[in-house]
Image (tube, rainbow, N blue to C red; front, side, top):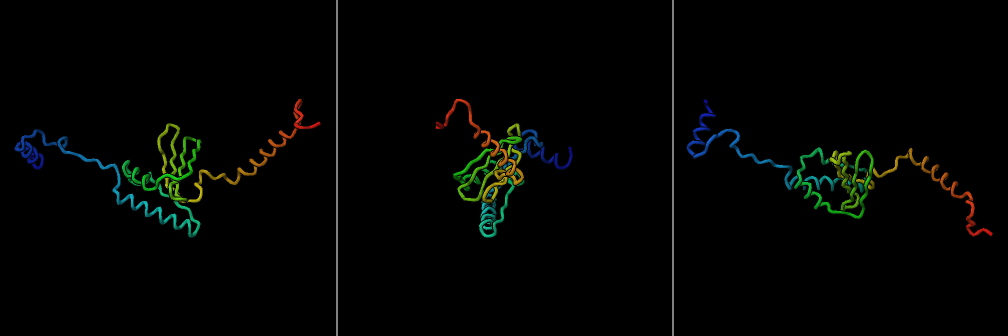
Length: 164
C-alpha cells in the first residue's frame, strides 16, 4: 500500500478498527428533495393556476423528471390534499386522475400493464387531457347512439307498451 491507502489503514488501526477501506465508509442515501423543494413545486403550481385563471392556459409539472423522493411525494400530496373528483382510465395500463383540494389542480398517475408508475404529473387545467373526448370520436359516437335508439324504437313482439 502507498499514500492515502496507507494513511487510512494506519488511522483505522490506531482507532482499533480493521480495514479502513471503502466497505467501512458510512453512506447515507437521500431519497429526494427537501421541504424547501416541495414548497418550490407548490409555488410553481400556484403560478400555473394563476396563469390558468387569468389567461386560460393549462400547464403541467412532470414529477418523474424531478428528484422527488417518497417523503417529498407524501409531503406534496398532503399539501395539495384531496378534492371531490377521481377517475380511472384503463388503456395500456391504469391511469388514476385525482383532483386536489385546489380546483384546477390534478394529480395524474400513469402505470404500465405491470403496474409500474411510468409517468406522474401535476396538471393545472380545467379538465385533464386524458379525460377529454377527442373531437374525431364525437360524430361516430353520435351515429352509434342514433342507431341504438332507432333499434330500440322498433316494436317488439308480445310487448304492447300501452298500445290498444
